[in-house]
Amino acid sequence: MKTLSVLLLCTVLMVARQSRAANTVIHAGLDTVALKSALTSMNRQYGQAFARSDSSLFLSCYTLDACIMPAGSPLICGYKGQLAFYKFAYKAGVRNVVFNTLALFGITDQYVTEQGTYEMFDVNNTSIGKGKYLVVWKKLAGGWKMYRDMFSSDKK
Image (cartoon, rainbow, N blue to C red):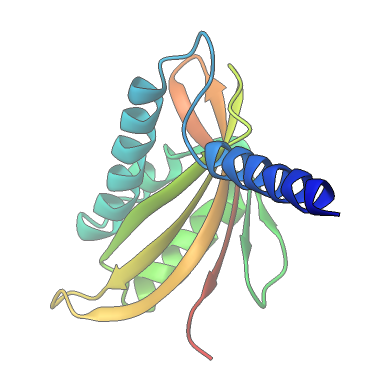
């Protein structure tokens, strides 16, 4: 019985260790530091699109066939949908969005999923909302672009 308990404990510890390792940025053959830097840069550009009132900067963060999936809203896909989303958010008062990457998953040469939190700010740099997100990034000739963007507010 004691041997079984020790074996069970070792198995639990091994699974926990593997679970923590899954939350780190590791992929053989891919420069994960450069990957994280590219995603951080694109996230910063997304926020700056609102600060600069520049929809083209916002649209350049997405693939042409990207889908935005806000909570409580239908699926928003393609260029026209992305532009309509930007205009709606801008009209609602968003002037910056700051992202905090918590983890990267499923890293391949072509796709990566990012998990994180965000905070939105108005023209006075006052917080107007916080939440969490998952983004599937797709590697294109011009760099990493958002392919699927799902997020929800922390507001109840």
